[in-house]
Length: 316
Ligand code: NAD
Image (cartoon, rainbow, N blue to C red):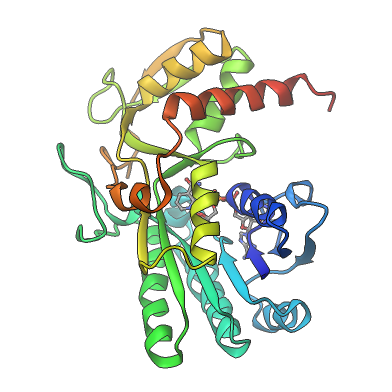
């Protein structure tokens, strides 16, 4: 297997790279380093600094590395940024993705995995329901629209060109190496703030003082594992939810992390953030059927908190 990982210097892509290298695959990372870090890329992987919006640069990477499989993780990955800059979001997430799809066809790539979002494209998920892949998508942010568009383009490319793809609709992914300075990634942000003894905001689900939004948090090991399984042809589905189906409020998350880190900080109730979905929960039954039991949130948060603690104790 010759695997090219776009966005492989970022959080999720770098974990996929680690797993692929452990399997003995030849791995290359394509990343513009706009938010990713060169040090996240494993030493055994080739690295191409490249912007997916640059069609000829993408073409050069494919011609040089000659991948047989591609995991497409590179993206403008923030909902808030997409609301502020919808055109830039579309240029990276739609046009950039089309450059990857076209290169996959031109170079007869055998397997393509696309990082989509269950958290954003399903919109509001009513109480008592977990969104399965048949749940009607309601993409209400530019980010969700761009991800959903690429899912549609993938199907066009399958019909027109025989492109073999798997769409993985991730829930809220957390774990070691997540950027604590971005606008998303509440687990990383909370770990950083708790360790620094700084207060944390509990943005309201609806009313100030409630327990905050409900999310489906899935551990990075399971997300990277789902990518590897899809690349190996072990996932027959074209679209798969990558979530646990377990609901957690922001307040529960904050409490678990403070316990794990062994430090209590001020939890400040705050207004609802504009555009925040109140409840997002995926049906992950099919993922569990294909991959076995997923990492429990308490275990995943323990590992994540330990990692952030260790980072803080390392000399910078
Ligand atoms: P990340 O920001 O850590 O990684 C994204 C990587 O893409 C970065 O290394 C960045 O430098 C690179 N990149 C961005 N724009 C690029 C461009 N124009 N050309 C080349 N490289 C570019 O984000 P992540 O959390 O690892 O997300 C990976 C993928 O998973 C993204 O597609 C994201 O939309 C999707 N996703 C993430 C989550 C989550 O909870 N983290 C949830 C749903 C979907």
